[in-house]
Length: 342
Image 1 (cartoon, rainbow, N blue to C red):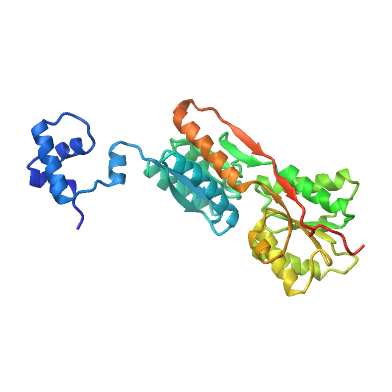
Image 2: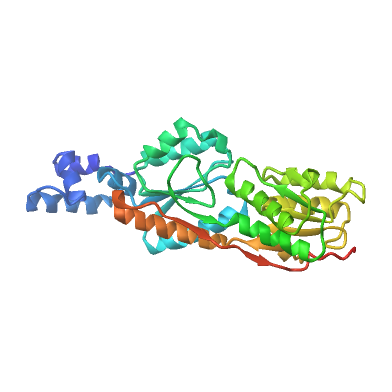
């Protein structure tokens, strides 16, 4: 059974307040009484709770990290980056997975407020239409520095670290065009989110600048979901040969996995039957020897940069200024963009 400060107070014959002052090294306690309490603490082998100690001081040494999908390796890499800088600054992490659910996100923020954390790093759910007054009030009343990572919150002016999604998508689609592809499809993320809409914008920009008409039939909304991309790819493969895209630009790693599952089931080869460029690296495909061309948005660096920004904001407290950093993506061509069926 755990020893409490009540047990210490009872054995030492003093009040709870006196024991608390000794534990927190605050307020005056006679030397004789202090020594007596410390002796009892040693005898009872008492270890003070870090949480209780933090609450008594009205602060913790913990930050909150809120992400929309912990099963996605993309966010695992962000968390690694955050953790490495948190360790350097002796900060602990409480992690929340919201499953792209705005209500879960609100609950996570409320719990973090109760925990009196030092700051929050958050990738908001992409359901931006749900960023209503309740949500914005929750953020405003959190009373701690907040840093966004790889996702925006409408109507807010928060610090954050982002990726140049328009540039990344533009370069990925342009690589397909340079190979000779003109019938290029895109599987988008949830278009209510800025990253997804920016990637679609980059796709359209690449086509327009190369005088390729935009075919609305080649724009497929995958909602960032693996199962959606799987179904979409099956539909694409059922299109008539002359109507089917010769290449696909896929807007995130999970949808690339769904697309690949459908292609493998249908015994389709890449790039012989269809070319692929993915936004985000898909590590498991590399491990299986399937080398997909991809846009790398330096995921771990996103986490590191966001955590450094949060540490700086914590130190500056109320005086910190809003900072927004955009990291450049990098295109890696591994052959899946080729046009071999000319």
